[in-house]
Image (cartoon, rainbow, N blue to C red):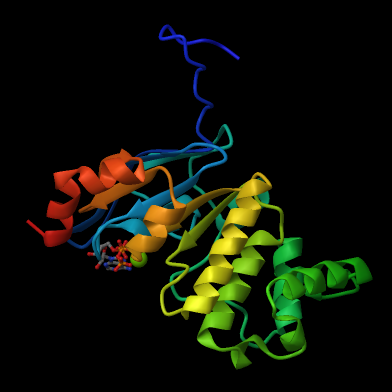
Length: 254
Ligand SMILES: Nc1ncnc2c1ncn2[C@@H]1O[C@H](COP(=O)(O)OP(=O)(O)OP(=O)(O)O)[C@@H](O)[C@H]1O
Ligand SMILES: [Mg+2]
């Protein structure tokens, strides 16, 4: 590993490197000059007041929304126009603020589709016993095994969020982006979620987490990036972010 002049090891290049993203809706600049770097093997937090552009940034990075300008690099590859399927196949998965599952598929089928990174896996004879086994293992891990045969629409809100999370993990991703994983979820399930995040992180998965629950963020995430009005204003450790007056000011609104 190379040494910096200061004698410390040079940091790893970011796993996700987003530069100068811009996107507006009508007159609203949802994200502007938005640059975010996520170092490998971190649990990076992305926080900011309502409407500060967190979900819009997620949508651009994962290819659900086109940026007007800016660049997304993931794992060293430039993605001039990220596309959800391609990003998924490159090892970047996500959950949605409102958990997105296929409501008419069974809980098990939802995971099979996610594992294969392709809904077409369900057609023809491409679903093998091994696929089902892997999906069942995941459901057991998430205490959802008893619901395997139910339609996903029959799950509670919290269970759907867990399923969405399990689906984001089953394809062995390198980076998982979670948009408000604990919102509307009961405390026991929040603990479950936190345990799974830490467990996967220990196994080498990198996380980028948008979350409003500050206790959760300060406990789990390091570093933390703060967005305000579409652009990052502060990035640092939980202690640095908590001590920075610009953060409080952003939340109070100026
Ligand atoms: N599809 C859209 N059409 C019009 N305006 C939008 C759209 N999506 C987002 N916006 C606007 O862009 C800004 C950023 O929204 P975004 O959802 O990215 O914020 P956020 O930080 O995720 O907020 P929250 O914490 O409430 O989820 C807001 O002013 C929002 O109203
Ligand atoms: Mg949002």
